[in-house]
Image (cartoon, rainbow, N blue to C red; front, side):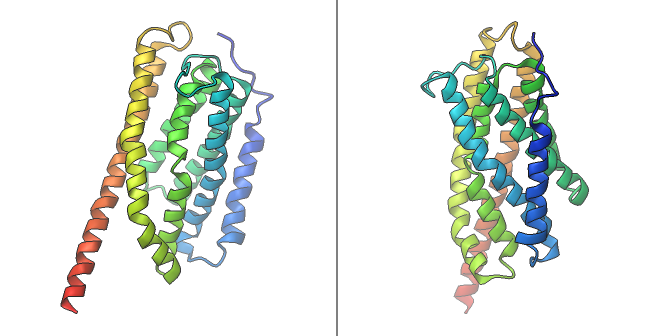
Length: 252
């Protein structure tokens, strides 16, 4: 197995980019926001800076090795572009993990999610040099909801101080929940099942150790399960809010 060289990695530069994005959000873009949500909004800006480029570059890098998304080689060697996308995501998760550990250490779910994501990304990039097609496919499914999710999050943080933000939040919530539910609750499990079938067939033997791809599957399934529980909780909250609102309208 050939191990990638570390000294020519763009990871330090990419990390600096996300540090700059966070600082830009915190001290300039959201400088007038309530301090309670200012750091969260800066994290959202950093997520937006990661999500769309990661989505586009992941798709391009997958198509670079295959002309059709229907015929993917999950065990092929990582290409240079795929490694770049992996490092772009590693830099983002490192910085957002730092954000949560320092400012929101009580959010154990997100911290665990970021640590698990970093495990999969770093082992794929630096330890095995294979499997990026499979991992970046998961990244596509994760990031395809990013723009919508961050718009929803920013409106949620701002809804108390802005009627416009409250309106955006109320309008967007059911559509975002439905979109997220389909991607994470249906497409995600289908894709992971396909990865599991391919790896279990033995085609990855000698390229990616069995313990490694099994651990990837476990981590990914855990992440999907956490996402489903999260959006289910949001659906329940939405139902309760709409029910309460209807009750108040009847009383008035």
